[in-house]
Length: 484
Image (cartoon, rainbow, N blue to C red):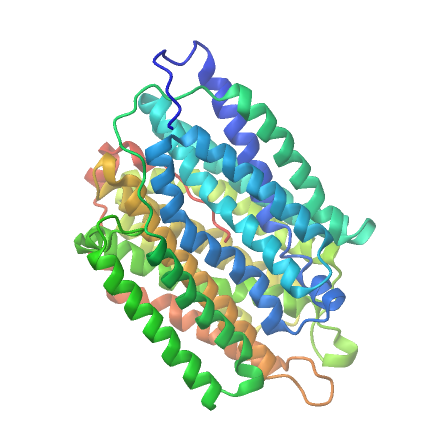
């Protein structure tokens, strides 16, 4: 049964609620970003090649892509508070499993549970909209800002924790914080006051088919270095992916209560923003995955790289997160003045410039830091914020959850594809003597990323967001996290 409380939220509950959600956002942001600086270390400890290591990131992202629409429906039907608390404990379990995992399957299961935490941000928006609709834009900006701060904290502390203690504590510390905040949230978050919707009817068949589609696609990409790009196994898995995908579309179009209402894609603002978000995610996730790999390459063996430790990688990545924290609010102001469409164009160009620079110049740490700042700190941060705004502005309030879920699925699929393809490229391009990726394989990955990022410029004119509309819409102040 839904949480029913006919009384209004108690006075003074606004600061408490926002504080709890902000603390949770910091912890979740840290937990999601921590594996990145230590990914080369995790590869060595578990004996993984880059393609297998890519599955760690894609599992988390694909879990989010499949479950966010279901979580959104549960939140709409049962209230944001109850759904938020359930997700919190799933994340706690995932963090604990990841901390003590000694094999790839166990680590993947932990990342699956952590991936459910991606639904916490949209569910937090539901909580805020239920309780404080008049303060929605400010509250959402605060929560997302703290999520970005959490990402920065995770990036900065992951390496030192892994070096000084172990990778276990890299997962355990934020998990303990999430657990404490979950206990506090149980008592601090007020119940919602109005219940007008019926219990959610979930489309389990649609969820299973989407999961099967994405799982076969990612597994195929991770096995391509061993199987070959045109081998029978590769082509068979590709056909199976297409079959699962086609079946999912048919089921969703006929389902009475689809997990993802594809009819929403008839709206120009929704489909155009979702396509751009997906392609952008595929592009900037390539350097997001490749830069730590490049930094960790031992120059004495590979002939390039910096032999960076997890602490070094954290230090190189941290300026990007700091810039992303500033870019969010600034982008919100730009969207209000010139519209989200113009901001998306500028963001795409900045994002593509990073991997282009890295293709030519990657012999010094400052080359990598500059590329990261342009790609993830400035470009992707600005474009993502504007795309979030465009989606929200193009639908009615009742459709916010579904519309943002579609955009979230597209972004998650794009991120996963980019990571897994880049991992396959450097795995297939390994030197037969050293068994390490060649420098050329990294250059191919960077050049491919730049080309992909610029593709959405063809349809960016269809993205919603005039300056006039953005300036009058409360969602124009919403900012989005810049890192996956």
